[in-house]
Amino acid sequence: MEQLELDLRASVLVFPIARNVRKVKEIADRLDALNGRDATAYWREVVTAERTKLSGLGLPAPEINQHLRDLFESVQEVLAWAAINRLQSSP
Image 1 (tube, rainbow, N blue to C red):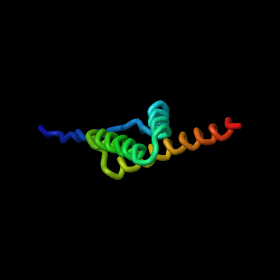
Image 2 (image 1 turned 90 degrees about the vertical axis):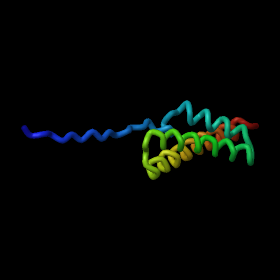
Image 3 (image 1 turned 120 degrees about the vertical axis):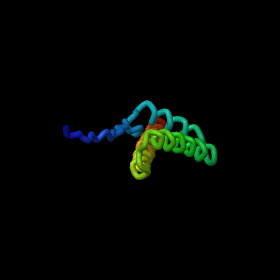
Image 4 (image 1 turned 180 degrees about the vertical axis):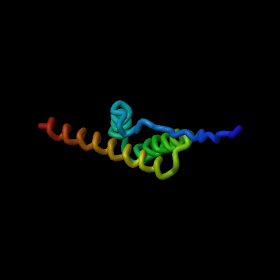
């Protein structure tokens, strides 16, 4: 009788945090309320937490870095729109 060899590798599919509108807005709102070192410290906390979570899921470093770059871009976009809205609504 011939023995079959099975390939039991799995792929992890992660929903990109950069597309989680609620989470991106929450991060942007908090950053918008902070300044200087406080804003930097908060952003580092976010990045560290996300990196730890994605690493724990087994994602390779390049993929984690891409997720974090995408998150940064999404947060920056929300911050930019918030600034534009403030400018347009001021007298």
